[in-house]
Image (cartoon, rainbow, N blue to C red; front, side, top):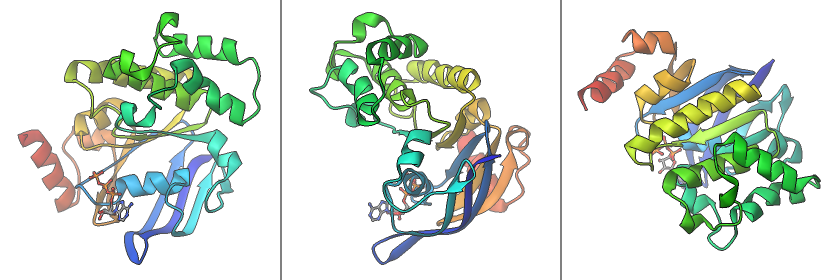
Length: 244
Ligand SMILES: Nc1ncnc2c1ncn2[C@@H]1O[C@H](COP(=O)(O)OP(=O)(O)OP(=O)(O)O)[C@@H](O)[C@H]1O
């Protein structure tokens, strides 16, 4: 089954269409990256799938069923998003326990204490962090909490928007290793936005190269690693990354 299917997807903000005619099929368990220059529409695609950019036409299917526009409770259990800046995505006056419990409360799920303890362990955080506040944690620890929060509802799909780019280089590898392990352990499907092609090589199976709201090429990570991208724009992107 495809975890995510996008058919002829256009997305607008007001009168401005920023994403044009996207067709993508991402298999269950696959890890897929969207790469491309700033403003090419990568985050907008994640936002539309998550229900945060409701002005779209075409079809978005999750686990074989089309999603509706706006809030869709089935989709919000199956699809969770992790943002670049974990500080921005965690409420400053809520403890880690409150942040992790909230999705369970919203969906009427019990056994909350046990689930929070188990999830802290799963993301490699000591139990002593449970009743602390976000500002008492490091950037990497906060991103572990954001990942834990996203996993509380046992989703099938994680949408990862530059999940390591706000972190110190030394911490980035830890979070990438964590994501890789969680994907394997929980059979997750990843759709990842990044500027960082080494991150794609490490974490993903395939990638789509985007330019000005369109997909210009879809390739396997093996092709990326071999420098074997077909489109001139993709090759430019690769060269720019290798140069810098
Ligand atoms: N909330 C918004 N309202 C209006 N226009 C927006 C909004 N968010 C993004 N845009 C515009 O939509 C286009 C696509 O932006 P998007 O953030 O999806 O690109 P991106 O490829 O993710 O870029 P980046 O790599 O910089 O995050 C850009 O032209 C951007 O200016």
